Length: 240
Image (cartoon, rainbow, N blue to C red; front, side, top):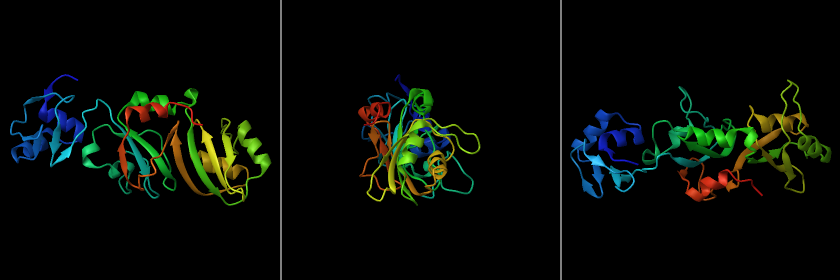
């Protein structure tokens, strides 16, 4: 990444206006390599310089990739006039313009949401033709019949005519009410609708994996962190 003006880079990275950044610089709230700076127009190298605002370090990655543990009651949207969104959970040091959820979880589903500003990467992992699986754990109201496993594995057509690709389904508990489901598409309320279609409505649902990458068990609901390069690559790999 080539040298950039300090105020422009911070504005683009943190979702601030240039005026806000200049006010922060004048107030002594911005540091470069540990030194307080007072020139908002100074040239910085985001690849090598360490930038801090109010003591918080900001990433200099060209694109950003964030693992979020979405809690219940939060919508997977970039903005909403009345409800809290997944972007509202991102702390200031990780927030930047253009951030969006790569794939949605409904309000009543928890688990792994990927946030990024990389549209090409998001398209690659969401396109069904690339067969990148998303793994879910569902608690259902009725034991899953053996015949339903075969139905879901073959791919089903819902009552409204929506055709679903084959899913990998595994029964996880002896009572057959906890099931793991892997799909490579993300149609509206897909897991809930497909299980309801075989007579087993969902009670709770969480996404546990994207590709071969599992949700970090150390992340509490509402918490998030940056992905490493290795983790980013695992999203594009098939899960076991």
